[in-house]
Length: 153
Image (cartoon, rainbow, N blue to C red):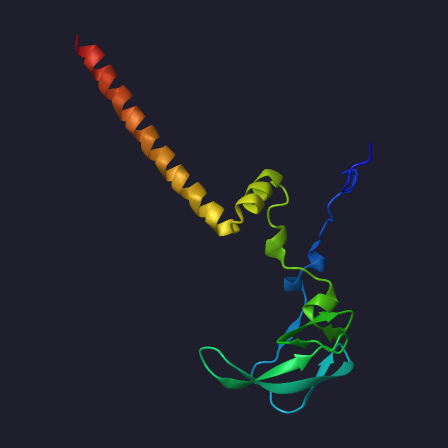
């Protein structure tokens, strides 16, 4: 019988250091003025369109946004891919933190089912370690007390 969602033989994609956003130059739109920005990188010149748009939040202000040269999507940062600057989705890069626990699939499964971020599980683990250490110290003290009582008789 054929499985409904595949045979399960597919291996997860391996990510290498050169495929992470943190390992590539990026440029932010914050503080830029005008309608276009000229980027010179490794001897290549690239002109990227800028647009000013009101952003509402804690501070209502006119903020600059890039237009991705590849997909024309509005974005705050552009990332270097093969000498040109494009948005994150066009670059195909991913964040390093999303691949931090590849060596521990059971933790990933628990985190996915519980829908908890990595920090929440780390916090719970630290609390459990502190509790175990407290119980261990109490047990050692109790055993030492019993050994002293047994030696006096």
